[in-house]
Length: 401
Image 1 (cartoon, one colour):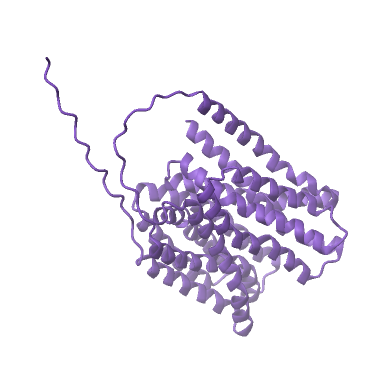
Image 2 (cartoon, rainbow, N blue to C red; image 1 turned 120 degrees about the vertical axis):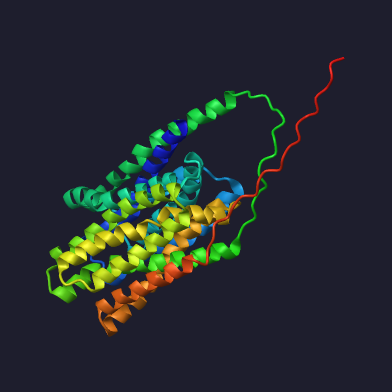
């Protein structure tokens, strides 16, 4: 029960942490309108928030493994919230805004590896617990645009300090539980005794991990590509207005949250690789449905199906990364959650160039092919089984004297 409570609190901190990247994206129109930033300057803000964060996450993962920096959970959350809170107040120069947004992005990066390690421990390493932790981030990112519109749209950029409220709200129970756990640990006086030898420690499987990173890169390119082009695809192909076309974009992440939870639940009950492969197969079929869709309504249906299918492998891929690098859980989390996601952002200009040269439909068809490649790549991976613990001989019985 205590572990479950800890997992729920960590899930709440994940929602608060991922609220801030979503808030930065929602603040961009206000920066453009109130401060006169051009689109290039706005893109620079996005770069500060996302690319630096993604690149820094593996470094924070390494530090979490090397020094057991559990305090990065709350420190990262504090940085993420402080950067956004101050961003509306530093109107003197563009670069001050860029710096505080970069601080927020680095805070987001610092949070993820340490929090993922803590969530793995709190949930016993199950796929279901990891999916619940992951969906907390989805919820936070989804709530951010509405919160920014309500706060900044009503009160102006000077009200950005109010956006620190989610971090404060979750920091209180997190710190309270950490303090109580520390007191309980210091008071416990469990006598030491000889313990039977546990199972041998598994070595890190770097080759398998590298193959998994390649698989997740295909996932990332598809996710970023669909998020970037699904609205424009409906506009270009069916000549609908932006409001109608954006329905598919709204459905996609909402369905992704359902897929994240479903993937963890299924992976705990069936074979993890069966769930991953079925997810990619269903995602490829859903993308093909979007490419061949005869109407905008079918695009919306396909977007919902794609969101569920694409996110079904999400949590199992994270736990698989942990099994490949059992002595570097933080690094595995930082790479799979951070660096590989940045690959999708780096590939997006190439996808845009292809759409300019041909059509967005061709770009969507290419992403269908990427999902097929990801499905094929999943067969190059395998589960790792922990060696059995050595048998301990029972003590010899002594005859009564």
